[in-house]
Image (cartoon, rainbow, N blue to C red):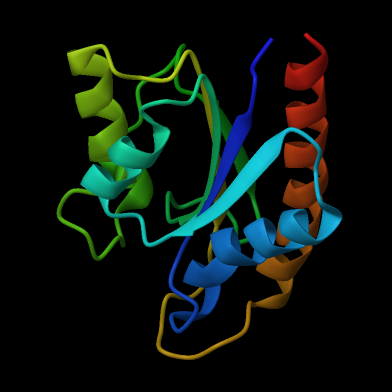
Amino acid sequence: MPQLILIIGIGNEYRSDDAVGLVVARALQARKLSGASILEATGEGIALMEVWKSSDAVILVDAVASGAPAGTIHQLDVQTSPISPDFFALSTHAFGVAQAIELARVLGDLPPRLVVYGIEARRFVAGTGLSPEVERAAHATVERVARLAQSWLQS
């Protein structure tokens, strides 16, 4: 049973749908999930590896651009499948989420539990606010993350 679940919302609130990870993190923060620590991050890979290194259960939420319809929610169990860098193709970081996960895998530094929720974005342009499809997906992801966190805490 994990002592503490780390939930990391990733994004830039001034790049439209890129902010979806932050929106999810803030909604979860408002719920005050027992047993969960919630952080916001930019998605810079080395910083992510540093914050998750002492956690045994991590949930990441970020915007993605894989070509699926906007608002699609991808749930990836990192222990069972590699993360393609193309999944986060519009990241502004040369060493981002996918690279951090795969480097941690090679180094044996992946948390025992690490799930990524990727929410398909429609636009990554300057501006604030989510597109309607991504806003709906954000609400659904809050529910999914809360359920997963509770199930991990009870297992």
